Amino acid sequence: MRDGSTVLIGGFGTSGIPAELIDGLIAQGARDLTVVNNNAGNGDHGLAALLAVGQVRKVICSFPRQVDSHVFDALYRSGRVELELVPQGNLAERLRAAGAGIGAFFCPTAYGTELARGKETREIDGRHYVLEYPIHGDVALIKAERGDRWGNLTYRMSARNFGPVMATAARTTIATVHEVCELGALDPEAIVTPGIHVQRVVQVARVATRAGGFKA
Image 1 (cartoon, helix red, strand yellow):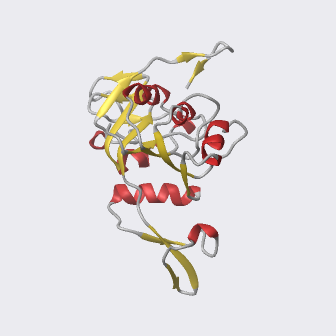
Image 2: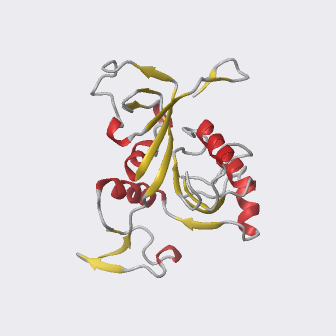
């Protein structure tokens, strides 16, 4: 990870956040980062902790404000972090386009709004569209459920969210898993992210919750 990198971080709210990798990024110390996530941090942990230590220059996300997004809110209001607001469907498609090698695409979302200001528009078959460009990442940090040493991954329910598209959109993908399987143990039909998109797999333990269960 280098200063100025664009980092794609999986997760939807607190579901599927690769917390251990974010902690590692904080310890590593890269600065001036552009972070891409669905949200802009919750509470004081995970992405919010990364923002709090001043390593992030810009956030690209769909939902920058929640009840507990006080870290981002304070930084944005004081001009210490930039924001690029992207509708959620556009965010997913811009990431998918990066992985698929698509140079740009026209989308009707946001036409006629502030989010389309300064962007090329076009009328196609009587409908208005906005030109959107892919979001490429230098590194993707994602959370999976199971994986093998080749990087083939499966996910757990809604923790899957942006992980698969981010893995394809980054030059280097680092994934946490709770279980490392022997090669061939994963059913090929159940693999969501093929190992060709993953360069590092890190096994992490499940975290017990106060209710006596385990955190996904």
